[in-house]
Image 1 (cartoon, helix red, strand yellow):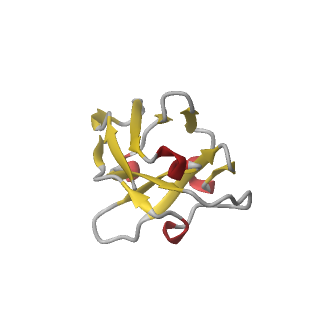
Image 2: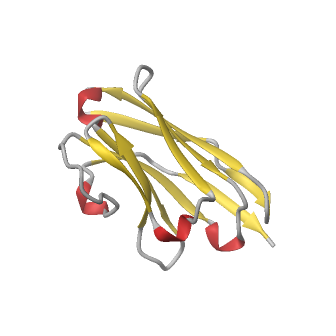
Image 3: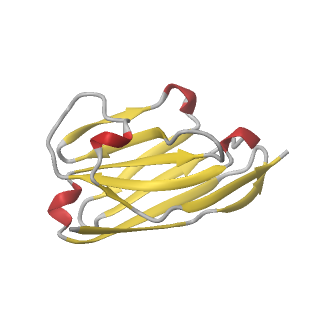
Length: 125
């Protein structure tokens, strides 16, 4: 098992920035690949970005260079830097992890086994 705890969410005006963090603990070898997802009310959970020692770095098309994912492998912390935020970015943001090695596109919820509780991001217009 691996435990994931997100932090860094909050409320910002449109055009602002936020930096999310996800700390992994427990059997961290299970976090070979980690990703960020989000889910807005009434919508399906969607992948934002993923990265890790045993997966490639992928971004969803809607990110359009506004978001950057990074991982501190020594500390087992995943980050998501979000710039130029828009009201449509408002959602609950989740961190996810998986132990499988796979270097293809990896932005689907079913490709990750472990999930955090989420952190709310609200962008006002």
